[in-house]
Image 1 (spheres, rainbow, N blue to C red):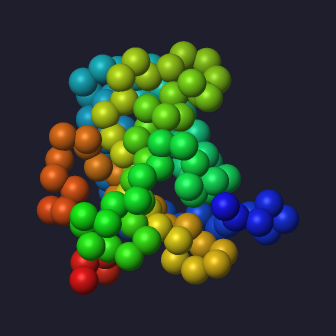
Image 2: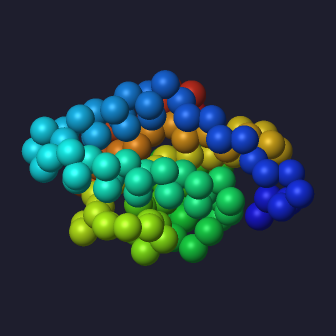
Length: 126
């Protein structure tokens, strides 16, 4: 758990930023602007939750993908903390790890039906 006196800096990798833009664009196209705003609020909440506690309940170590320190966190675990209307059934998880003592990096935002190992960033592979 991070020292509460020195919060972690959140770094969102370029690939994760593209994932987020794609998710939000698709959500708006398929379900409308309201759904997009709800999913965006959920993503923001989940990102804040893992920065506050990278090993929070719901976060899972992922040794099977052979990436040192890699964890996933399904958006479902942050759903109840979103203020206002909520996403009914989120389908994505964050792939992240501590880069160093002060930095948490989100590498990808992946749909939960995808094979995680196939969507790893190059620097996560051994």
